[in-house]
Length: 167
Image (cartoon, rainbow, N blue to C red):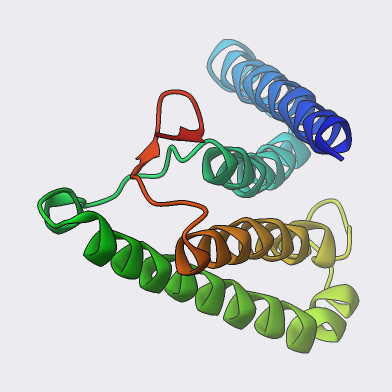
């Protein structure tokens, strides 16, 4: 199971590199064309925006797995282990709740986004907004498992952001 998880996140990491490279090439090419030749590629602006959105959502999945999201932990670090577990259970429950809201909203808007087209490329907008579906599922699963871990006592310490493991 762990090897499937590692392979999945390795695939996401490769996608992140490819998206960043594609976005960089498109923006750089467009800048050179605009300032050097007085023209540009309209599709590169749209596609770099698509790449950026995907980069953010896929990056959020990786950051969630590695506990690298920014957080305010002054209260959590200053309380005892039992209170810490309760607070971290609540925090992960809230993250799970937000993921369920995003998932529900994405599903409700699916048809609208699938029938709307991007202005330049003509691609269905679901290619832009649809990434919220796997993102909400993956982060929701991670938060749900952590919530259960803290609630049952399997997890008790603060997440270690540098290594993606719990202390």
